Length: 347
Image (cartoon, rainbow, N blue to C red; front, side, top):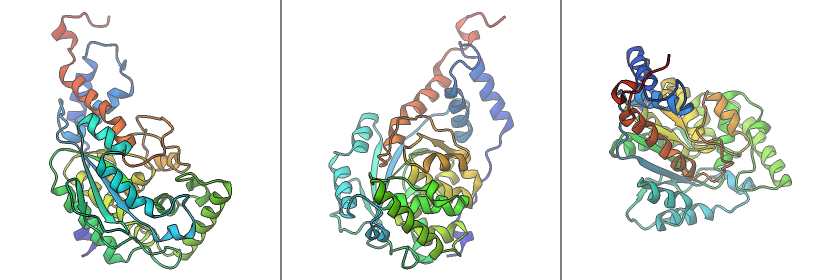
């Protein structure tokens, strides 16, 4: 499959007339100008994405993509790779934080096995789309072949096409995937790897130093992997590549994309390097405590809604931010204007 066939065309959402109408509607509400702060910018963004002065959020899909990483064998994580499949079981049993939040907010939760080193029994809420049982060791060679990378992106697009609604909430699970995200950030933004690497699942100082050293070697090993797809294949993982596909498809379908943290941000970074207009469809839920996330947010020109010191992943930050999107839409649709309420406007 050629890159042209793999990557959908995504048009800009530059709509001056709609933007002006939305701003006038926001300004006419019974409040001082700008009194709802950044919630007003969120209203404007949601209206532009969904093409309406009264946008409605429908059938939100919270998708958690899971995969294992061969690089984890190099000691870049505080937890063993078995935790990936064990946490997938926890998601499906309803015991994880994201499971609780999905129930609270009535979000449809789907867990996608993009490449976990475990065989799952089929059941409701699980999609088995395994490319392989984990990526290869990126220090020994590319994490994925070009064909595997393309297959994962295509699968992500297909999975999104099959789901209803106009909102995608991104989540992920994969021991070692903060390493893959840090490598993608370093390569695609030309940033020093030490600034991109964090403690992930809880590394101590010595383990963190080892992680930085290993990732520096990986970058040197793949010095030729400079394009978005080249870097994605070199560094992995299957869950990130599948999220790239889901993001591209969601953007092409003009869905709202609610981004979680560092790893989902890496998928958005790749997608945006392929199709810059992707970013017009994105809402960034929170600023992660992972060291490289603020650098990533700067690269994406993103201002997250929340800053709670989170570093859990799973899509938990996206689920926590979800009510703000609902509130923004309800205020646009239901809050009275000065004229309709008979309230005197500013002098």
